[in-house]
Structure formats: structure tokens, C-alpha cells
Length: 232
Image 1 (spheres, rainbow, N blue to C red):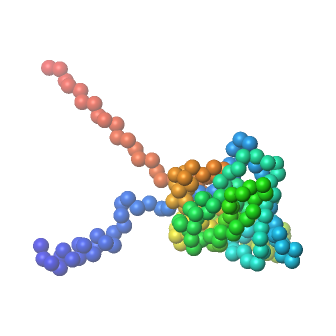
Image 2 (image 1 turned 30 degrees about the vertical axis):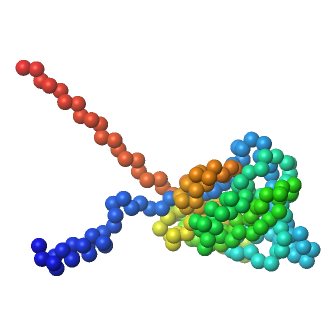
Image 3 (image 1 turned 120 degrees about the vertical axis):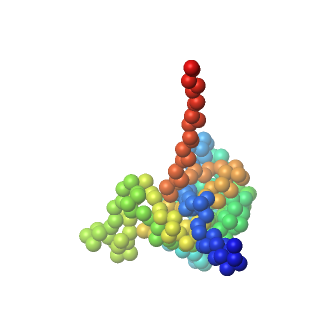
């Protein structure tokens, strides 16, 4: 075989996609409301008089947050501390420092970690702000979607989703993000499979995951063919 032929074959091999490659998997990260004796955290508020959290959705809008000073979250009712919680009406992600380190290590360009005091707790906690808003919802694969129309949309919600059930996203449109909010439906905090696995490996409490991408097809097991001997 000539050197030119060998070179062309190697080049083609580099261009060919790997058979083992598969689309990335993503998950909607929820608060596990089933945790027994769990405590409820209130919406974070600023402890500085001249600074105010204008909206409970401020930390879940998919954009960085600035200039709020020292923050605090109340606990009502008291209960078992969790590593991960969604606080208040705004469902703001509040995590223990060890969980914050997972986000800091695996998704440093996708999140903002803001220190927050948790009432009656000396342990360090952080608000996780997903700073990326990604157009990725796959309307056709969701169980149900309804968008705002000209007749009922608030001025800033045109084209956004009124309802999403059975959320599914297109992983090819995430541009490699590991943590983000879905455009038009930012209530969902989407994380990559690597984040999910890191949570599970660390034994993080209070978190629950729902897959929002199509799971890979299960490999079919070939049934062993039984050989029968014919009697003479």
C-alpha cells in the first residue's frame, strides 16, 4: 500500500464520527419534596436597607445578578438541612458549599455562585445562578406546550411558553453548556449528565432529576440459539 493511500485512510478515519458517540443527556434539576422532615427556605432578601431584591424570579431569569449586598434566606418551618433546596416562590437554588464546589469545578462558565446566609445555620451556603439562557426546547417532543399569543402575552413574554408539560430539549442546540435555563421557560434548571453523576457520587441530599433528552435506545440482547441435535 502506498504512503498516499495510507494517509488518505487515516484522514478519513479522523473525519468519521465515532460509533460510540451519542448525543449528550440533560436533566431538569428539581427539589426533592419527598425528603422526610425537609426544611423550607424563604426567598433570599438583601440585608442592606438601600438594596432590594425586586423580583422573586431575579435569580432564575438566566442572567447574572449584581449589587444586592449580603443576602439571607429564612427557614419556615425548621427541619432537616439539605444540600440542595429550591427557596421560596421564586424557586431559587440554594446549595451547601460542597455542592457549590461541584458547580464551580464542572461548570465555571455557566454559573454565578452568590453567598447567602441561611437562618439558624452556621454552614456556608450559596445561591446558584445559571447565567446562560438557551433556545433549546423541542416543541414537537414535549408532551404539551402552549405559547403566549398576541391576545394574552405580557409585553415581555411574546413568544414565551405559557405551559410546558413533559419537557424535552434538543441537545444539539445547547452549545456544550452544562448548566442553563431554557429560553421561554426559565423555571427549569437544566444540568448535564456529568453534573447529575457528580451529585450522585457525592451523595447530595435534596436533589431530584428528570431527564429532558431522549434516553439512548436499549441494546437488544441476542437470544442464544439453542442447537438441537437431530436423532438418526
